[in-house]
Length: 122
Image (cartoon, rainbow, N blue to C red; front, side, top):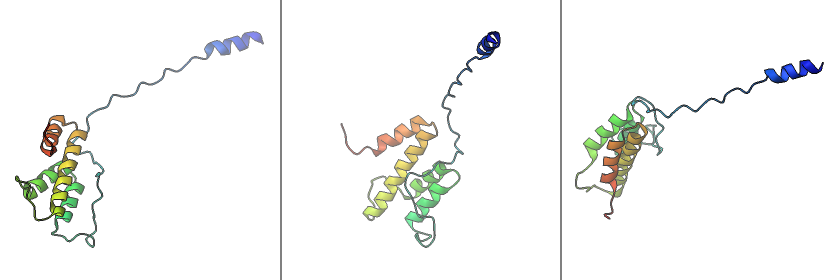
């Protein structure tokens, strides 16, 4: 009886712990959840409004390309906009694009956008 206990105790071995997989770069086609909530329903945003176009750009299958197109069409190089709402939406799109660039592993593009977004010198 004592032998069988020793044998079963000897057979027990620890299973090696699995190592965590290294973080890999996400593909550009990976869907990201937007940081800001934008209205998706037509009742909340008029079809031709800046908000609806921003929402469509973020919810597009390739959000990075959609945001680049949106900024190309609406961003002003001198940062002069009609009102604060337009400036806020452009700024939010720039930050969202920067965030998506970093998440997709494109650090250089994210750094360039971050440098453009910094308002203070020094």
